[in-house]
Image (spheres, rainbow, N blue to C red):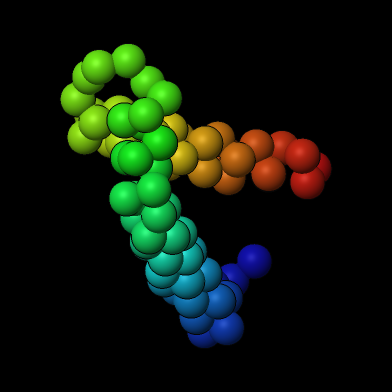
Length: 76
């Protein structure tokens, strides 16, 4: 299979689009940040709320990566 302009263009657009979507979804997590931090203050033991919120954000990113990697396996 030869590398055609269409194939290269589709690959480039897919890479750019997926980075945009990941950034957009991270922004979605940041929108309710105040509500998440308030929940953590009221329902979690004493601790650093910034650390807990950072852990929640990292769990979101790790979950997205696991989902992205497993989609290829499930599609086959």
